[in-house]
Structures are given as structure tokens and as C-alpha cells.
Length: 101
Image 1 (cartoon, rainbow, N blue to C red):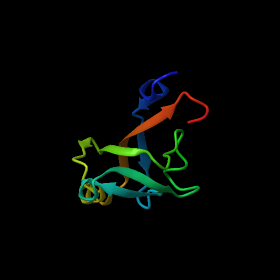
Image 2 (cartoon, one colour):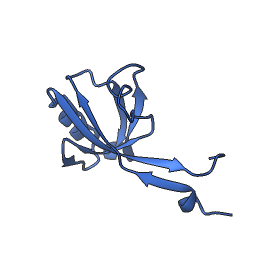
Image 3 (tube, one colour):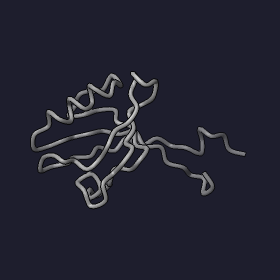
Image 4 (cartoon, helix red, strand yellow):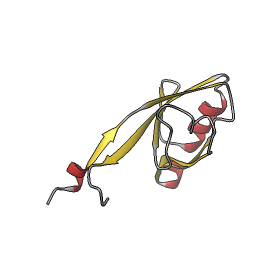
């Protein structure tokens, strides 16, 4: 039987959202809650959903506009709100090679 680490692979896609807010996603978690910064909602038809590689619920934010995040939600919100026309985010996405996971 394969180990969990072999069944999951990590991908770090970069998403470039353009046109200004609303960006079409919601965050939850953060170090202040003892959790990673996770996308908790993606608005159907919104900018985050309309990308070639759309954002997914469960994606972890790790970089916003070339700033590596410390993990605090308020920091991420400030960087997102400070984005005028373009928002560049790097996420950590785990994908499964097991059809039952």
C-alpha cells in the first residue's frame, strides 16, 4: 500500500486576476486561528473561477503580489485590498493520485 505522502503531490500554481475587486474568493484561517490561510469559497462565474486554472476551495495562499505570507489572515486581507487592478497569488494545492482520496 502506498503511503499518504506518495498519494498526494503538491502543486504551486500562480493565479493572475485582473480588473480590480471583487476578486471572487473568500479566505479563512490564518496563524491567529492556528490554521493555514485557505480559500473557503470561490464565487461561481467570478474572477477566481474564470481563470484558465481556477482557484479551488481548499487552496492555501502562500504568496500575494510577490510577498511571501507570514500566515496571518489580516496580512493577507491587507495585501488583497491593496491590489488595485491586478492581484497575483501563488497557492499551494495538493492533488491526489488515488481515486478514492
